[in-house]
Length: 143
Image (tube, rainbow, N blue to C red; front, side, top):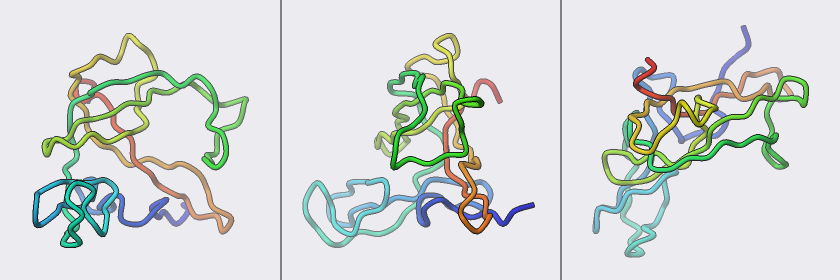
């Protein structure tokens, strides 16, 4: 099997189990951010720390993307194997809303308020043959 590595370092704790998103929290005002930031978007403080944001949340809003992602987004999908997928905002326990690809890809399977769970998935191979991993959320009710 290919060597697996994160698409971008610092987004999630994988391969640690259970995996969770990583973000930042301002030590002055408590504001959370994803991905992690070196300064606070709320108060401007540079006193931030990397924190775990958890691996579950609630679907805040969603849509179905029925076309292949455009550049610069690269996946291993082709026009022949592409299938529509959900895209949504998942509200985490800290109140932060994170945009994410969703496992579910039909309006019948998605609804605002749906409990969601994080999963780590392959997105594509890099030029060296490494399998790059990213995150998405899926219905916790379907697990």
